Image 1: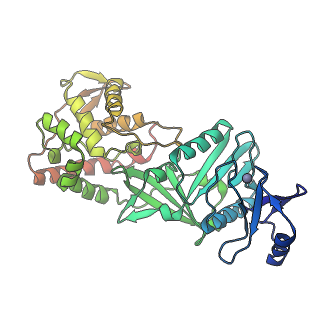
Image 2 (image 1 turned 90 degrees about the vertical axis):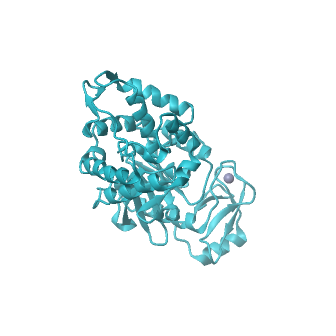
Image 3 (image 1 turned 135 degrees about the horizontal axis):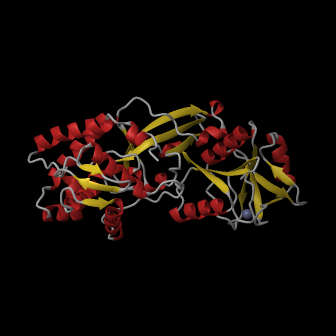
Amino acid sequence: MFIALFENGEVCSLLDGWTVEQLQRWRETKSFICPVCFGRVQLKIGKKRMPHFAHETRCVIETERETTAHLQGKQQLYEWVKGGPLKAEVEKYLPHIQQRPDVFVSYKEKMYALEYQCSLIPMSLFMKRTKAYMCANIVPVWILHRSYLQRRGLLFQLSSFSWLFFNDNGTITFYCPIRKQFSFLHHLIPLSATLAYGQWTTVPLHAMSFTFLHMTPQPQADTLFYVWNMKKKQWRLSPLYYRTNRTFCHIVYNAHMMPSLFPHEAGIPLRHSYWFETPPFIWQTYMLMEMMAVPLHVTFSFHQLYEQLQRFIRQNIVRVRQLPLVTTSHYSYALMDYLHALVSLRFLKKVGKSSFQRIRSWSLPSTIEEAMKGDEDVLRRIVSKKEDFFIKRE
Ligand SMILES: [Zn+2]
C-alpha cells in the first residue's frame, strides 16, 4: 500500500513525489502504522518493486497481495483519474463498510470504487465487496489485469473468475500497467462455460477518460458468422461434448434423437446468452423440446416456458452464470431473445405481447452433412439481422 501514518498520526503518501533518499531517511528514523488497523507497517524500498508499505502482521481488512503489477497499476490509475475533473483518493478507507478500494473516485454526488485485480480472490469476497459498495451507493468499477485476457484463435477463454468482472455495459475491462493501456472485451457471446466469442478494443490510458469506462465500445467488423459456424460444426463433430455431458445425451436419446443431430434451430447466438454457462445448443435444444410438446397453433406464454427453464436450472441441468455487476438484465432475457430468434426463423408466431404459437416442426437433420448445411442457412438468417442481438430491444 502507498498510504500509512507517521507515529504522530500525520498521513504519509508515497505517491507525493518523494525522492528515494528522503524515503531511505524515513525508513531509518521513523516508524509507520496502518491507518485502518493501526498495526505496524514497514516501508519497503526495493530495486524491483516500487516503494510501498507492508504489514508486519495481517491487516484486519482483507487485501490483495501487493505485486509489482498491482502497485504500478494502482498508481497509474490513481494519477490518471486525478489528472481529470474528478476527485481521486488512493486507498481511502471507508469505515462504514470497512473497505478500502484501490482508488476512490467522487464527482459531484456520484461515488465510484475502482478495484484493480491482479490475482485471484475467492468469488465470495468479490461478491461481498461488490454488494457492500452497491449498498453504500458507490459504483464498483472492477478492472482485471490484462494477463487474464486469453485469446484462443478468434475466441476468448474466460474463467468463472473473469466473468465476475462482466458489467452492465456488457464489457470486461482489463488494464496493463506495462503497456499503460485498457482493453475492453465486449459483445461477448459464450459458446461454453469458459469459451466465448467477443470483440476487443484497446485504448491507451492517456487517450481514455474515466467516464468512458462506462460506455460500450461499438461492434467492429463481423467475424461472428464465421466463428459461430465453425463452432457449431465442432459441437456436432466432437464426441467430447457428448461424452462429458451425459445428461444431454440421456435427455436427447429419450426423445429418439442423436446428440450430434440436434435441431438446426438450437445453438443460436443471442444478445443475452452470456447468462448461461451451459452451451447454447444444449439449453436451446431443451427449450425446443418443451415447445415441440405444445401442439401446433396452440398459444403458450413466455412464462410457461420460463417456468420450465427454471425447473432445468433448479435441477442443475442448465447452469446460470454468476454476474454480480450486472443489475439491468436477467437470464430470462436470453430466453426472450431466443423466442424472438425463433419467430424470425418462422418456427414460432408471436400472437401477443408475450405469447407465441408454434407454426411448424423443428428441422432435425438426418446426416451430419445435412446438419452442417442447414446450420449455415439458419445462422445466415440470424446473423444477418445483427441488430437483433447487438442493439437493445427493450
Ligand atoms: Zn492494517
